[in-house]
Structures are given as C-alpha cells and as structure tokens.
Amino acid sequence: MLTFGLGSGIAGIAGVAIGLFAQVTSELGSNYIVQSFMTVVVGGVGNIWGTLAGAGMIGSLQKVIEFFNPSNTLAAQTYMIIFIIIFIQFRPKGIIALKGRAAGD
Image (cartoon, rainbow, N blue to C red; front, top):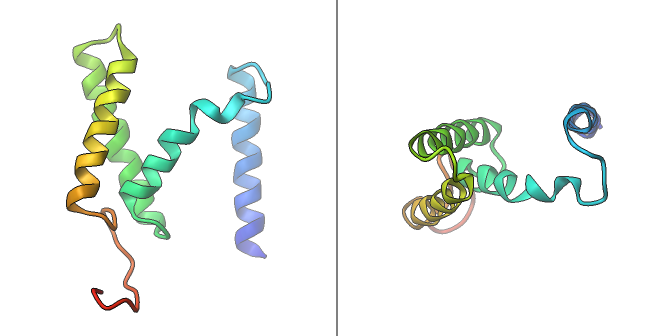
C-alpha cells in the first residue's frame, strides 16, 4: 500500500507540473512514454537505482548530441534510440540487473 500510495503521489505531482507547461489533452503523455520506457529498460527493470542511472545516462547523452546540432532534436532522439538498441544487445538486463532464479543468473 505504501508503494502504491507513494507512486500515485509522485504521479500526481508530475501531472500537475506538466500541466503548467503543456496544454492538457488526452494525448499529453504520448511524447514522454517512449523515453520513459527506454529509461527503465536501460537502467534495469525492477531496480530504482538502475532507473536513476539510466535516466542520467540517457539525459546526459541526449543533451550532448543536441549540443552539436541544436536545431534538430529529432536527430538526437533517433541517435538515442540507435544507442539504446546497441546497448541492449550487449547488456540485455540493463545497467543494474536484479538477481533472479533463472538458469543464467
């Protein structure tokens, strides 16, 4: 219950914050869902520290790419998706993987 309550509270605060900067419509979160999913996958599913590390890595790398070509943010997102595909080929469990009961763990 505590986790659900904390997650709901954080989601509510994020919804209010994004509502201040963007027009509130039914398609409001569609611009953020792909980057959010990439952050969780790169960090490692089920690990909050991995997700934070993935968010820092993706955000920093995207800003470095945008620094070299500030007029084209779509290119930066495209390069990030290519980077993440290559990253997942070498680390399929993410930056910080949880130990499991599978044969390969």
